Structure formats: C-alpha cells, structure tokens
Image 1 (cartoon, rainbow, N blue to C red):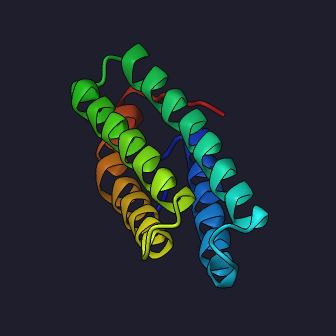
Image 2: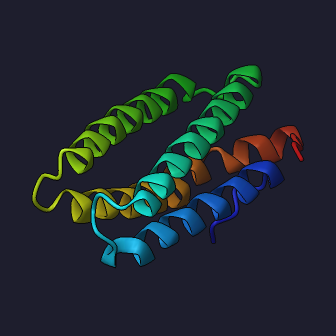
Length: 129
C-alpha cells in the first residue's frame, strides 16, 4: 500500500513514481538527449517541492522523528545532485545507476519511511488536501 493517509502526499508520491517510470521508459534515448535531461530536471524539481511540503507538515505537527526524516531527505538531495552530474558528464553506467537509485529510493522511502508517519497523523486527524 502506497498511501500515507495524507491526500496531498499520496498524489505527490504517485506523480513522482510516474515521473520515475517516464525516465525509465526514456532510458533508450541517448544519455545527452534533451528529453531525458528535461525529465530528470522535472523530477528533481517536483521531488524537492514534495520533500519541502513533507518536512513542513512533519515539523508543524511535532513528528518525533522529524530530524531523522529530514536527514534522509538531505542525503537524497545530495545523492541526486551527484547522480545528475555523473549523467551530465556522460559517465559510463550513470543513467542506469541514477534510474536504479531513484526507483529504489522512492519505493523504499514511501513504503517504509513515509508509512511510518501515517499512524502518527491519523491519530492527530491531520488532513492536508
């Protein structure tokens, strides 16, 4: 189950996973293609918006593991910057590595890490459309 019980986050998670799928589908394109770069940029921008939204809600409602959660987001951001640079520099295997990282990170983060805060917000009856 990919739902964390916060409608806004559920929508954002679905969109992020769709964007990762689009990147995966574009894997046959040349690594320096404009379409691939555009998709990667869009995913990066959209995911940063989502992470900021999530951090804001977690902090506002005193989520006890907020700092740990934020550190995971910061590590993700750093990893994505590094992966994007590798892709831009056309390092061998960089595209496949980036795709695997994004797919694995988001799936794990939603199913394991984000689902950990779902009961906390359910107990507070927090809704955020």
